[in-house]
Image (cartoon, rainbow, N blue to C red; front, side, top):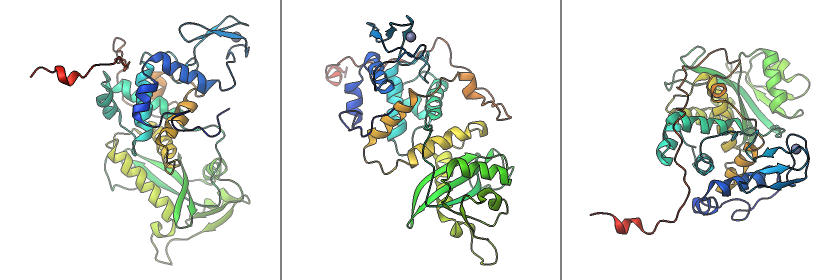
Amino acid sequence: MSRGFPRAGVEYPGSYADVRAWFPTDAACLDYLDWLRWPDGFHCPVCRGTKAWKLPDGRWSCGVCGRRVSATAGTIFHGTRTPLTVWFAAAWQMTTQKHGISALGLKRTLGIGSEQTAWAMLHRYRTAMVRPGRERLSGIVEADETFLGGPEPGVRGRGAQGKVMVEVAVEQVGRGLGRCRLQVIPDVAGPTLREFMLAHVEPGSVVITDGLASYRPACGEDYEHRPEPIGPSGQQAHELLPAVHRVASLVQRWLLGTHQGGVKPAHMQAYLDEFTFRFNRRRSRARGMLFYRLLEQAVQAEPRTYRSLVAEPGSGRRDRLPPPPDKRIRPASLDGDPVDRPWRKAVQ
Ligand SMILES: [Zn+2]
């Protein structure tokens, strides 16, 4: 369950100053996660019991099964050695910067010891960015496949180095763009595209595609399919499907810009999920709202081991492993002890 209309400055921080003031310690962060995870009061994830009391360290002691439960247990924060203050600062950077932040950027901004630790934190957040049961696209929806990723701009086509085939669907809203969905696909066969449609587009919607034959069985009887064949009319694909091509080029620019073209094919889906999370909320005027949504989803998302993040099962390829974070490195906490005008005491 989630809260309906959270307000800036009440349910979520309205500025980075709020973040620092509200969450100066891990205890404060833990209490916020607790409040997000159990909006109707604690229930034990082991026995579903609701009789419990709070321990001095912020955990719950279940009065039914006796288990001690932290709000981070069984979530993406499970067993983390990174202070929650750092996690919160990372969530703020990731959700409030227009283009998110790279692992290297986060390492530098927060003074995290290793880039791998920063990357793993961002990637765990990415796994929480798809909300289960989210509504499908509807109305007039463009759909097309494209190739994204890879280190070089402008190289197109199947098999180009590091590129991944992605199905893109975008709502047309007047002359503008609505919401989008992006999914890595293995091929453009009818069944693959049909699965994509049913997962991401509300039946009954108008679906505009190019003339590729598999879109007909993909849409079947469930959608009002309007194929726009390229060729005879002499129009370019980006004129026929402007919304899809607009979004695809925004994604590609983001991958090449913020992430310097370094996204591995096995990780592409998670990056697409991050792009979609931010894009579909781009009109939200309150910056802290995305921070709130991300943490709210993060306490519902499954924990992931570092190894499973690095090598996505079923991707068919293993990345060259970034070395697992050094066991001894623990990012410095951002705990905020008040400091009295350090600049006045600087040695000249
Ligand atoms: Zn219990």
